Every structure is written in C-alpha cells, then in structure tokens.
Image 1 (tube, rainbow, N blue to C red):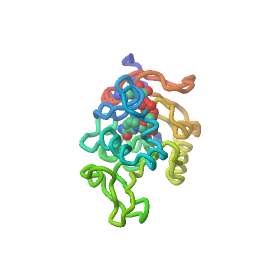
Image 2 (tube, protein in one colour; image 1 turned 60 degrees about the horizontal axis):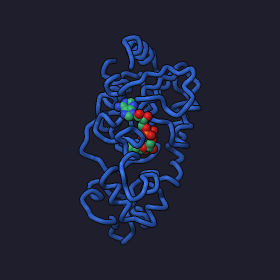
Image 3 (cartoon, rainbow, N blue to C red; image 1 turned 30 degrees about the vertical axis):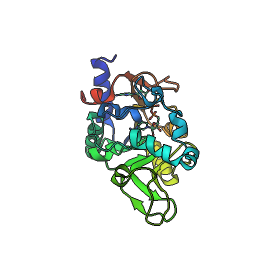
Length: 240
Ligand code: NAD
C-alpha cells in the first residue's frame, strides 16, 4: 500500500518535470475494463485451446488465421471503452509541459482518446489494419463487424497493425521512443510487468534523475534505486 508521502513525492517529481517520459503497459488500461495478461484475472489465467502467446504469434496468424481472429475479436479488439484517470492525467501533464512523451506497449489507443499527442505505440494499434497483399487500410470497425477472416477487395488477408510474437518492432517508433527516453528528466513507469522484450529494455536508455514505478506488485526487473509505489495507477494519478 502507499501513503500520503508517496503521493506528495510523486506530485513534486511531476511538477518539477519538463520532459518526463511515461512508459506503460496493459495495467494502465485495466481500470478501463481491459484485462491485462499477467494479473490474477488476466488473459494468461483464462483457459483456451492454445495459450495466448501462441494465439498472438505471427506463426499462428498465418497457420490458423480464423482461430486467430476468433481470439482477437473476442479479447483484443476492444473499442467500446473509455480512458481512465491515468490516461487523462498523462494527457493533462503533456499539455502543461511536464510530460514529453508516452511510450506504451498497449494497442488500445486509449492514450490518444484521452488527448495525449506524442505517443509511441511499440506494439502497434488495433485501429490500423492493412491488406497483406495490396496494403489497403481498413478501420477497426470493419474487422469488428465482419465474421471469419477479413478479406480485402483484392482478395488478400487483412492484418491488424499489431506486433505479434515473432515479429520485429517498427524501427521509427523504437528510435522515437529511445530518443524521448534518452532526453527525459524523469521516467515514470506504470502498469507493466516488464516481461516483454525488447520493449522492456528501452527503459535502460534513461539517464535522467528519478525513476518512479507505479504498479500492482513489483515488475520483473531490478527495483534498486527506484521509487516504487504499489497500487492502482488510475487511483494514484487521480490523487495528484
Ligand atoms: P502484463 O499483463 O504483463 O503486466 C501488467 C502489469 O500491470 C502487472 O504487473 C499487473 O500487476 C499490473 N497492473 C494491473 N492493473 C494495474 C493497475 N490498475 N495499476 C497498476 N498496475 C496494474 O502487461 P505488459 O507488461 O503490458 O506486457 C504484456 C503485453 O500485453 C504487452 O505487449 C501489451 O501489448 C499486451 N496487452 C495490451 C493490452 C492493451 O492494449 N490494453 C491488454 C493486454 C495485453
């Protein structure tokens, strides 16, 4: 649990920041109702015919496309949710000149919905979908409404622009995120188990003053020298 001192310290760090970076993951969106992977009620604890890591792999996409889309539509393609206090506060701090960028592993687009402008989506977005043959773009609603494997007018399979296991991250997105982290005066990490690489390695580029971690339970990285607040990020940010 956290106390008033933690909130005061966090408030002071944010107020003193001029180009902080927020690095986050699925835990940022659980308070909006989207399950993460590794919490008690996360997707990894639910029972499927294949483990989620398998179903979210590029190999599975190409070999079991219909089954991929069953899982993807059911669990990943969530569009009828609203940002929570964590997303809104980050957008506000960007407008106020405290936060320079949000680097997220999420694919749900909630930071942009809340008003954040400089967002690096390391794992892509459910809102972008492209034909694998001709490159034609399709909105998320097109994938949501259809049944089975979504096909382009040209006959090609439409694929969401999300990074599946076995695929590489987009170079431009990674270099933008690394540059923002390198230049950051403070680094705020939240709602991530820091288990997924190479995303989790990007925080090692930080050379600034304070590293703050706000998470339910300690992430899978060395927490020495880090100001760690154990709790729900939306609840904590709404107190700032
Ligand atoms: P993860 O599931 O591995 O870890 C989430 C972490 O957040 C856990 O440590 C959990 O205890 C913590 N957490 C949960 N709710 C929280 C809250 N309200 N406040 C603070 N902490 C909270 O997620 P990850 O580290 O992001 O890595 C898994 C992968 O999951 C990422 O690659 C991401 O692309 C993908 N994913 C994204 C979404 C999404 O877009 N919303 C949802 C599920 C998974």
